[in-house]
Image (cartoon, rainbow over all chains, first blue to last red; front, top):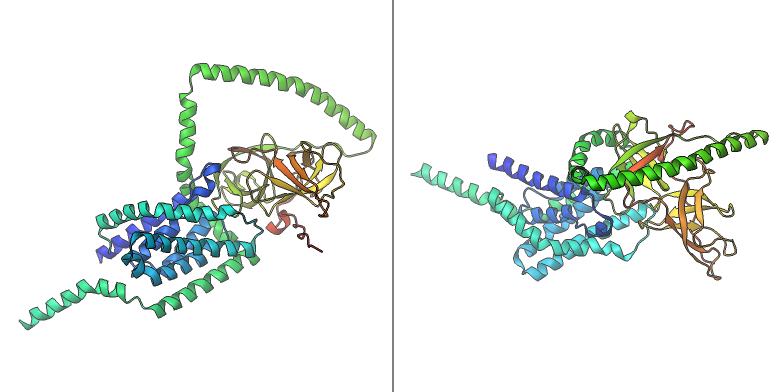
Length: 161
Length: 313
């Protein structure tokens, strides 16, 4: 039981760090280079601990991200619960396949996140679409290998299963 | 023996239980969860968008989030403090001398301004017009820039406690920055002029031409909309607030015309404007004290109605 509590604590701690990272002020030229930390973390935990992190966790994390960002409440909740769902469907594939295919799956998942949130924004806000909306997705894919190594070490050290 | 066997089996089940659970996270329950989560989010979005149901909740959350924002901001403000602390005496002396000179220059200009203002007021009285009013300013710091890539908003360290009101204009040393769109207890949020949902009524200082400047969503350009092709507007024209929206006082610089594209096939000229305020770099901003009572405004009223997009005939 103690292990359970510790695991949940460790997972929530990592999410809090990711939320802080996604709030970090950035210089102007790096504005689009911010990876989708929260999405990547959600994908990792859903793949590694699907009995602890799932659709509802995605929803909760999304709502807190909305509150912190000041965007429309529920928009990221919607997006991240869908991402969590697709990740649960793809989790075996993500664990088994080689690294290249894994990156493609990550690209697809983060792409889904970006497209859905863009559509929601189009629905509720006036925005002007340009090419730069693609950049965060690519940056996220580039960051994934490093994040994976760090999180794997984190998970092993804390023995979260 | 039997008891021991049972215990072993139970132990085995416990050990494998986690793995089995991992494998059999049933797909059907996932779909149900997804439906619940999505419908909840849609309800949240509609409630937030249509009825602003979450405003009070946001205020409460902002009290909890405020320390976190300070924490995230701490390394940056700390860095600034260290930099100011470590400045050499020589650099400070140079800066001091420069500032002294600037001060003198400004004081000289101010003398002239004062006499001009008095003269202006006298002339206005002669014309029976209302005297030009002075706006009160107060300084605030930008705590952080909203990382939401679809909107351009900043959080500042002044809130209801310091008398910030909804819709209050925000400027910096060189021009209009934006307006306050939500006020919390200790912080408030300002929308920047470059946000695609924001518009300011302006006039051209060279010939008094009135138009509306609208944000484009990109950080360094604005657009002047619905200006006919034939109108006299040139690059480097200065646009200042016209005061007609009732939101901004007259005369704060908004931007400078960057480029004018006149396409005879289109009904209106495409005019790009460079914002005067240094939106990317400023850390201190000025809140313009509203003279009129404008506290009971909803967010809808602050954002001027955006004109319909041009339809092609």
